[in-house]
Image 1 (tube, rainbow, N blue to C red):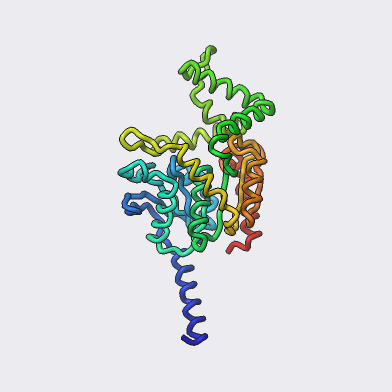
Image 2: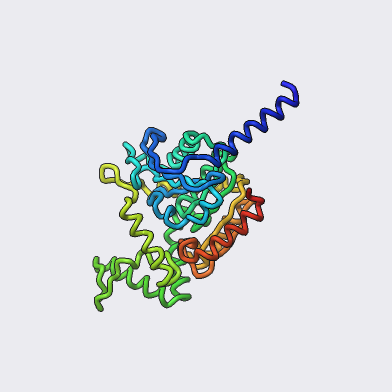
Length: 319
């Protein structure tokens, strides 16, 4: 094969991939992915970005990430067992490894060479695991509500320490913790003064009362669509997944994908120092803290979040 032919072939391949990425048909689809019927929606134009969540599916992102549809072809998908996607046959199919397989098989089904990720919380971890396994198929990542995790035997201790730190910083958060503790101890959703305490567990993840109201509206829609369903009354063992993830996390320094880490300044589950650890581990990353936000920065403080995303995309020469 002569040099001229090689250049033409390479150009044609690139051109076909680019045209296809820009012309993925928008709409709602159900396809068999890894032997399971997966529900997904395509909106927007541009490079392809995957977004979903292993526990809450796609609806929360469809309702809040419309600004990205101006720059990306967004593939919102219900992970197995969530929303309108089918429930797998066995509990092992809910593993982190299977979540990575699910993304890879969907990528192949769409015939896309490189994808972007918008990852939130647990899905950020899955995006990182995918990037570790399939580095040549990831163009970039926007990760939110994430950090390096503690060793499995210390993870709950670290959450308690994070909680205590925020209690000292916020009177509102201190009351949220008291309300949640009262709910748990008394098995009730009513406070002695008659207040409804049912939203206290969700408020724990937020910055303040105002930002929590924005998040609560979205989580109600997630509950309607359907969170991850059990299999024969069982849910996957969290401890097993954490142990696996912690082992894989030690390899994250191998990831060279350009990455924006966008964390709420007041994310109780992912304090700034732990997000800093992830940033230092990912050699091609930028870390931005969003003010007046907790675990859901693009919802709690949308204006700053999308400004920072747009700014970063320019910095990495996004086309």
